[in-house]
Image 1: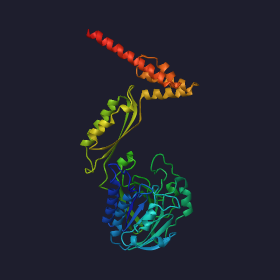
Image 2: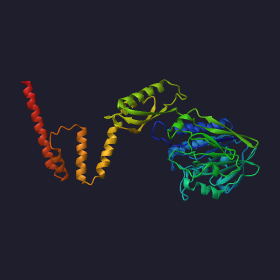
Image 3: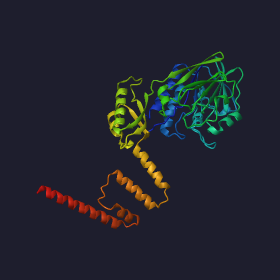
Image 4: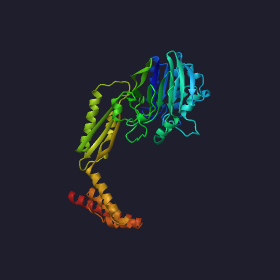
Length: 433
């Protein structure tokens, strides 16, 4: 028995960007490759769509992709039984070709009173949906039972799983499919899952989870736990640069499931570059970014048909007088934009000037002075940074403005400017003579 385990297509992600077709192309390749490898059953563990309410263009592409499985001749897989699922919800259409069984992910989850996109796909006959229920299939190689729980908020995951209490079906290969963070396996470092691998019920032959966007493998009570990962890069984290995108082919002979990861060919190359600076000028930072792009441009790539993604994460400190805004991103984009999709993160790059200004603002906020006095101190600080030559009395102008005497302030500034112009003209005439 051959089963394909796929996850997290995120169809529709990056709409309006140079990467808007990637999710569709990579999901299509995953389905096509699974069918070419003679998958008799396809499992999708959540987040087929990127948005809760996909637009028509995304729906159209999704249905074309999932229709590939229904067009393939069924290889002797038939519905044998359902557990806690109404059999009337399953149309004859997904059983005519290669059946696709799916659960919803966090991107598709909606309230109980609403129909989510995975339910809509089931109504259209493209998939069989599971959530807190199971389906048993007869195959030429014996029975297989798929048990599924779609995404639930992390704080409720363990409680809802304990209430469901799925039990393995006797004389069948049992696969439990979920879409949750599990212990150290998380979508992001900010996520705090309450569910751990040890919390999953035992007795299953294989555990498959979506939600985690990188490929990973582990065990639960000696049985395999696999995370296929997303078919598209979404987070641009280091681990997504290290691990390929694809899906698992599961080969079940007897009672032992064997699995192999299949890498996709249509995925863009992704390079993650991190550099920590110490007292660097903005020009030095630019030079490093440009030289890194030069090296990448000359290096090897897996996919020459698509512009690779390069994410720079800049950390550390700049020299006094330099700021993050001085780094000329536009010139880098103009030079390299035709060769790379460039993302530069500067949030962790600080400068002494910025730190001093931040501390200055904190200090005056703690002083027991009026808002006008705070404003005056900020103005004085900014003028010092600009090496203001004290040509006119800015204190007087500030006071006039704070009292809403705008016309008087304007007249004072105009007088000072006229005097400066007259003085400059006189000096010019003297020098000419």
